[in-house]
Amino acid sequence: MTALLSLSRAMFKGFFRDRMTLFWAVLFPLMFLVLFGGILTDRGAPKLEVAQIGDVAALDRMPAETREALEQSVEITRSDDEAQALRDVRDGDLAAVVTEDGDRLVVHFSQADQVAAARVRATFQGIVDAANLARTGVEPAYALDPRQVEDESLETIQYVTPGLLGWAIAMSATFGAATNLVNWRKSGLLRRLRLTPIPTSSVVLARVGVSLLVALGQAVIFVALAVFAFGLQLTGWWPLVVPLVLAGTLAFLSIGLLAGAVSKTEEGAVGLANFVVLPMAFLSGSFFSLEGAPGWLQAVSRLLPLRHLNDAMLDVMVRGQGVAAIWQPMLILVAFAAVCALVAGRLFRWET
Image (cartoon, rainbow, N blue to C red):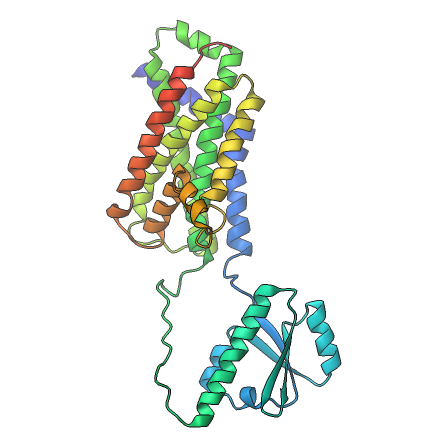
């Protein structure tokens, strides 16, 4: 026990004295949290900027309630210069120009931005349909009742934090284990530790313990910054993040050990770890949602441990789900850690 505590203390001090490790493990992921939380918070689809030329009955006679709903997605300004407005549409400065020609609502738009064009056509088709129905004097048979499934207070930071925290844990555990193992082997530290009376299990437990403490520290810093700086609102089940962080750290620590076991240089270990972690972050939804991804990509994503870690943390931090949401992801993470650790053990070398 004394040897274990001494090794843990030494490794912990080494982590904080290594400025590059601190930067890549803590500061670099926090930069992404600030970027996504500060710049992209509350940034949904931008309003369509539309110019109205002259009188347009479908817009001017619109009920106040309908007009208010329309203004949430469309910003309509009046203009007397139709030629200039059309040039603005061609240049991309306006989404559309609306005029009235008899009983026709004329909408000029550019197909250069296909997403904006589709929104323009759908929006004004709905306006025309509503105006035609109102003119008939017939009561509508159906009414739209839109209801958001999440709490209306939820903001972008709610969905950004879990994914970025999962990526930070993955990067710290993988890179730290890979580079440390190569450095210790090259410097002869592993050989000297092997010759000491300290059991190998103590060395392994010390390294794992330090990684777990660092990961918990990362989680505290991430969540505190998101809560106090960007308004993250945690659900009552947020403490379940702790076992998820521990299981995720074990999974990615094993990947780092595997990368360090097969690499002969620090550069090779970093390159291999980067080759694994960075694509996994994109494929696991750490930076953006995968809801619209093709089915085959979704299937590949579900094979990755980071996807299960991200989804589980989102469930307990944002969606308010309980223990039932984390037991399966934790089993997957622990099983993944066991398999990778077994392979790393087979390939492990004490010396170069």
